[in-house]
Every structure is written in C-alpha cells, then in structure tokens.
Image (cartoon, rainbow, N blue to C red; front, side, top):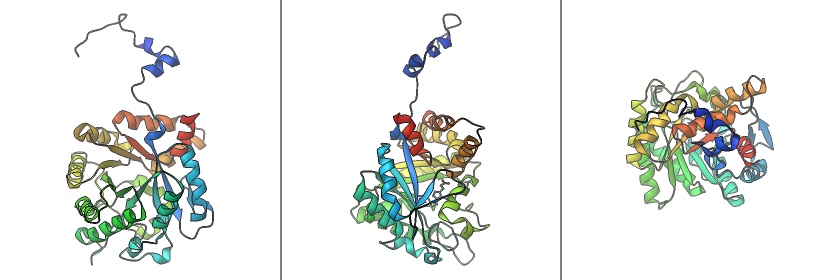
Length: 331
Ligand code: PBG
C-alpha cells in the first residue's frame, strides 16, 4: 500500500471529470434494499393523522394501513418497522397489553402479512404499553427491574413472533434479554424468527419526536432511561453490548441513533462483521426535514446522510425518509 504517486502522475480530479466516471468509481451506493420504513399505527384511529415533529410522517388507523403498505411496496422497500400507539386506557404498570395476542400491533402484523411480502420488524419494549412510559417494569423505588422485565419482554417477543413478525427487535436494553428471547423462540419452534437487537442503543435526546408520535413522552414525564440505555460518551461499552448480544443469539445488531454515532457503526462492523443496521432516528429526521422545509438545506441532504451510513459500514438503515428516498432512487 506504500504507493508514492505525486502530481501530475496523479490528478485525483481525473476520476471526477464526468458524471458517468464518478458513478463508475463510486465506493458506496444507496439502493432501496438499504432502506427500512418505520410506521406508526394508532388504535381506534379512522384514517390518518399527521405528527407535528415528524413532517410527512403519519399515524395510520388499521383502516388506512393497507393503502400505505401498498405505497411502500410500490417503492420496492423490503421491510417495515411497526410501532403501535395504543389507547391510553390500556396502559398499566406492567404493560400487560403487550401480551394480548389480539392487540393493535398483532392485528397490524397479520394485516400487513395478508397484503404484502414485506418483512416485518416488531419492537420488543414495554414503553408503548406502560403507564410510566419506561421500557421495563419498575421496582418499589421506581428503578427499572432488569430480571423482572425479562419475563414479560420475552413473552412479548413470542407474542409478536406468533402474530407473524419476521424479526423481533428488542429495544429495551435489559441485560440478558437476547438469550431469554432466543431460548423462548427455540422452545416454541420459531426457529427462523430473526432477533434484530438494538444492541448499542444510547440514552439519546434524539428520540423526542418518536416519543411524541407514540404518546409515551407524557407518560415518561421527567423520567429518563439513563439507567438502562447507554451513556452517549461511550464506545468500548457499545462493542461489549454487541458482543454479548451476538453470543446470546442475535442475528442482526443495530446502532441507534445513527448519524451522530457513525463511529460506533464503523467499529461494530469492523469488529464483528455481522449484519449491522442503523437507525436514523426521529430527531435526526426532524432536523433534516425542518432545514429542508425552511429551504436552508437542499433535499439531497437526505441521500447524503444515508450514504454516510453506508460508508460507515451499515447494511441497512431504518429511516423515516425511506419511502421518499426510495421513490427518488427508483426514478
Ligand atoms: C422504544 C423505542 C424508541 C425508539 C425506538 N424504539 C424510543 C425510546 O427508546 O425512548 C426511538 C426511535 C426514534 O426516535 O425514531 N423503546
């Protein structure tokens, strides 16, 4: 690799001369296969409802879901990540509704399966279902109890697998959840259900718009998730988390948020060389969209931002811009 080539033998601008040549030497490409669309379904909603802090993104009632799924499929996107907005009256301390086999998300999964070939990713965490908005169960002091939470989380994962989810995606950050879920899936003969682990999930302020979208922010109030999600200062710890999750049975690992954590994506991919997804989270999308809407930035920044994930080594990106970017890529 010790090549010494100086100007004018080397003119790096030669391979930038025309668009055709630039395309030929491109080191990374973004395709529709790299994009996963998150989608919010809301209980009891007739039609759709916009979300203030996520321009262009809606909540869908079950009666509006088929049409949206058809649009996503038309864009040749391969997968959706589904997030439920459940009726507040169904929330309790234990997130019991998460285990109801006929709950909103299970209904939505069955409906999507009936009408499409999309791969479905379903989140494993209790925050849409708990009255306190935390991802697990609280002990008497209000601390999220790791080992008590594991049982309900693995039951939730099984419920989602039974409904037809192709991938269950634990986003709760409890220790030991992957092993527990993998074991339960094996015992119940869900041999091909993929565990997409939110392995390195940071305690980030970039999740704000998502929490508004699913209606968990008011439940969470001033509460934080710092005792289970990772400190934003750490990267060695992310590799430790990923290693544990792989050893416990994760098929795919995820880093989240995305753009502010490209270093983590790169380290994870370089170190473990297994399928690695990234989540361009709600706050990242909101920032880009706000600037685009104000005409402070050109809309091409969306594709530029997604290419940065590819450069870092991500195999796939969950992004609210998936559908919009996919239609551009298809043009
Ligand atoms: C639930 C969950 C969150 C996100 C995905 N799954 C929020 C949180 O952990 O508070 C965030 C996604 C986004 O911001 O787009 N555990």
